[in-house]
Image (cartoon, rainbow, N blue to C red; front, side, top):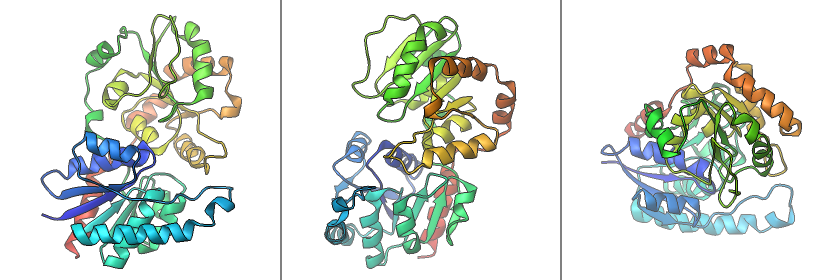
Length: 347
């Protein structure tokens, strides 16, 4: 049985897609994980995945002085990872983008181990741009992104299979929601202070007609006594969350956006657009909006009145619902696994 090393971390958006692929490879390949002492370590431990901890250095945007020592730290990290790879002797390294993937990709190249990476966003991240020439393939969630790389291949996005075919009745029981239409609000893995604030102000109005299931981020719940309004810090069972939703207000990280659209859930995206972002969520939102598969509101335009108007319009947008029904956005696991084994056969 072939052995595959997966790497990616720093946020759940780099880890959960890897877990989806690892689950699809059960019985087909032996999978281990390289990552930092971050969220990836916790998720791998929770899922019983063999884990090797490494040090990875992160480029800090807009802060030159913070990056002066980066080459020296990277050299040390690559040497550390190379030692691990020589020990476990994998047949392939699968990267999910982000800074955690850079040392494994460089070390694998030195060891003669083929590397595949996956790019989630419309505009490729810095790490994937850096390692692309060292990869056999750059798999992409979006067709236009694949065209940017000589070895780019459009596969779609990895998705957990437990997102699909879930019972709405059971999901609503889990969150103590009645059978009225439900609005899912998701402000990203850590929640969005701005979205949280506005949603809470409009909840008394919106909950006269709809439930709100609000994923607000760790430590960000507040006292609220509004019928039909439910706050959740974080939920491991994303399938139950999505099963509740008749519509959604969300950030536009690639994983969440692709999952909502694959599940045919009408969404209003409010993309992240601050100094911590390279603008990837804006590009993702533009792509789906131009395809007629979502509504979009810029964060600078977010207000109580506009959000209420958009929420009610979203529930009644028959044109959007028809476009979603006809959409071919779907789980990319099968295509990704096909490319993994195609590369393994060439070794």
